[in-house]
Structures are given as C-alpha cells and as structure tokens.
Amino acid sequence: MTADEFTISTEASGLLRTIWDAGHRRLPPRYETDAWDRRLRRRLDELLRPGVAVLDLGAGRRPTLPPADRPAGIHYVGLDVDAAELARAAAGSYDETVVAAAEEQVDALVGRFDFVVSFFALEHVRSTSRTLENAQAYLKDGGTLLAVAAGANSPFAIANRLLPGALVRRILAATQRRRSEAVFRARYDACTAERLLEALGDGWSMRLVEPAYTGAGYALFSRVATAAYIGYEEWLCRTDRRELAPAYFVEATK
Image (cartoon, rainbow, N blue to C red; front, side, top):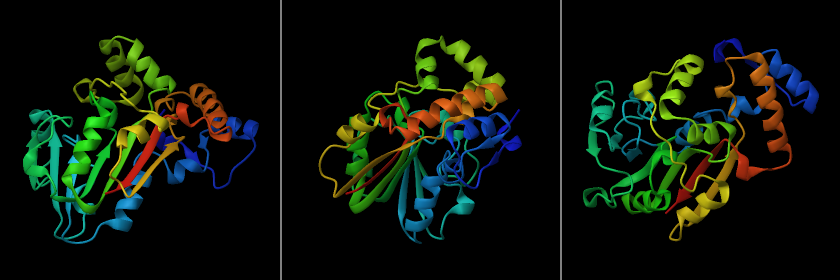
C-alpha cells in the first residue's frame, strides 16, 4: 500500500469517524495543508522573489526547492557534510555547493543569504543550537530561516533510536521503498517544540515553532497501522501535545 492509494478528507470529523476513515484510506484535512513539505513550499512561494540568494542546509542529492520551482535569477547554494550526496544531485540542482558540517561555521557564507532552508535535516545534526546559530550568521539582516524538523518524541523517532541501524534501513526499505544508502542516522538533538525555540536563541526579530501532526507517512503500508497511528495523532492534535509532535515547522527572521 502506498500514499497514492489514500485520499484526504475535505472537513474534520469526530475522533471515531476519523480513525474509521484512516482505516479506509482517507486521512484528516490537515494532510492537505501541512503534510511533508507543503507548508514550507507554501511559504517559499509567498516569500521568494527573483534575484535572492538561498542556502539549502543538508539537502544533499535532493534540493528542498527543485530548479523548476524557483523564480528566475535565484542563486541556490547547497551545503552538506557528504560530498558524495551533493554529487548525486541532478545537474543544475545547485549553483554552488559547499561541503561542510552544518554545525561548523563557514566564514565565506556569513551574511550572504536572503533565505536559509532546511527540510528534515536538523534531526541529523550533532548540535541543533550551533546549526541554527550558523544559519543566523549566514543570513543578511532581515533574512528568513525556514525549516522542517522531525520530532524527537514520535513513535518513529523513538524506534529509530532504539533499533539497530541495519534493521531500521530494512524496515524503511520494506515499508517506505527507501534505498538504504539514502537513510542517515538521526540524533534528534533539541527536536521538540520547547527546545527548538531555545536552540534558535536570541538575535531574531521573529521566531516561530509550530507542531505538524502529519506523521502518517510511516504507517501507510497498512490500513490497521494507519488507523492506529491516526488515532494516536488525533489525541496529540486535539489535546495540544506539541512536545510529542512528529514534526515541526520553524520560521525565524533575522
């Protein structure tokens, strides 16, 4: 079973009906607006303009914003610790690439960018606070950070930390059709709502960390697993258990 076999409800329902719908291949309405990169892409569509400079932190072979979706004249730079991952990106993915750890400041990047973007990369770094400090340094005054990070306390994140890496790769290959070489160790440093706000630190004119209760992608291989997970996620969402959210949207302006 794949995500393509599911539809999304157009309106919210009661808890039991939502669980029933999930078991019958229909997800809650929030999956239309907040799932995966949709909120990030929506903000980029609102904010990007021709001629700006964008730094993509940790995207590797797959830039957060594909070339076809970029306004004209954007200078798009990819930073990743893995040179081989950057080399696997399709031709034209980046105007410039930088091989460096996100936690280590690259002096040549300081003050160059209008936007720093990061899509499911923060959970992989050793120090989220240092990474965000560097992102702030790379931005021009008035520049914007936009990121999506996996939550440290979701069932999937906990399993990822507890299970052996080889087993995690096999599970993801079987249920998510992901290649083992595209699965990287996640540390989840500071990846909760409260700790992400702390990791952003001072020096921002605006800071926003919002939970995204859209983690069912890991359960779509089974109707039963999807229904069970959506029941749990509905409890999180309806009772505002943001410290347990499967993902977070981060926006900050320097």
